[in-house]
Length: 455
Image (cartoon, rainbow, N blue to C red; front, side):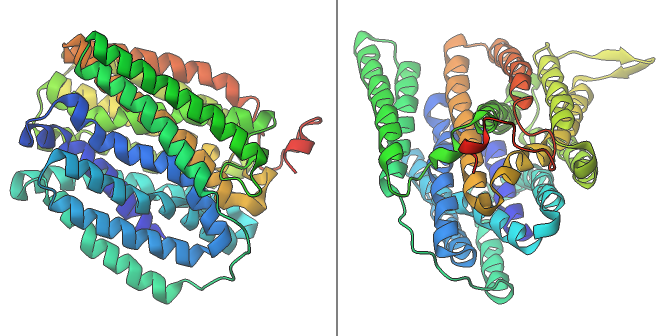
């Protein structure tokens, strides 16, 4: 399980480092190139709840191994993509596989450690920052040495190794007789795709025709979203479990996860581009600056996971979210040298310090955020994990699309990133109110009046 999550986290950060290089290689616009990241997040958004449901129905092992196979095959196709359009399509295939790895793996861990689930999931989640250390640094070296295509080659032997070990170590489970809501998945994908395409069209052209097409797509996306809700309420076995959408704790958790994803999945995927365009760093240096963030995450996450039963969920989330918001405010400032306690710090050192601060905040938040609300329905941990991931990816995909559009329209990268960072910081601070509507600890009882929606 750990190797699969490591593979997934490495891939995400490697592609983020390669984003400026791929944009230049295909000589394409920032808006179109942004779909290299956005399409992956879009497919994850639509597929995560489906993957969680499939994992519950078909069994953890079969779902997990099928997704690893698809992810590995998609990586192979990405490595030989002859055009930006085909690369985006192959990333779509890769994301179909990647979407099922986390929910099925989380379900396997929760089933294996029922008496210490909170700690196990917290420690399990701390694997991600290890990949975030390896990915940017390995990616920067591979791009310089072998070119951007080598970033996808590395997934192939790793994927095969995960398949081999999984076939030996994981045990098969009985399948459950339940339907899978493919119509719901199609409606989620269609709604989000229409909304994103609407923004992208405006970014490429501001003619009257472009505005008209954009408005039509936007309205179509809203209509599909309304029809999705109507379908899910009436579906026999809905993709998005309505019980996981109702009640104050779940509503608050879903809203918080949108903001969480916008900041830590969406905007942070543009950090290497920020380092290159604003701080003037090389591709290798832009990968290296993410290392302090990952180190901070690992240290803070290990400590927070160990004490999660004692500390609960609420205050680690409040403190961690506040620290991340402060980090984004600091990132919004113009790059410059500074003197701290008599030491002259250059812009690179300052940027790495900011990343370390944000990593510490993320590490404090993650174990609690990944466990919050699961105890309300522990028997449906994979579905809850899939839904949580969907809302995080929703925040990420929307924020990347809006951010690349804003950068394109502003024209000045430094000013554009400053606006983006301030907006995200404000969103994080506002999201703290949602935390107080969630269970405060693993042992917290369901508040009166909400039990009917969480049983």
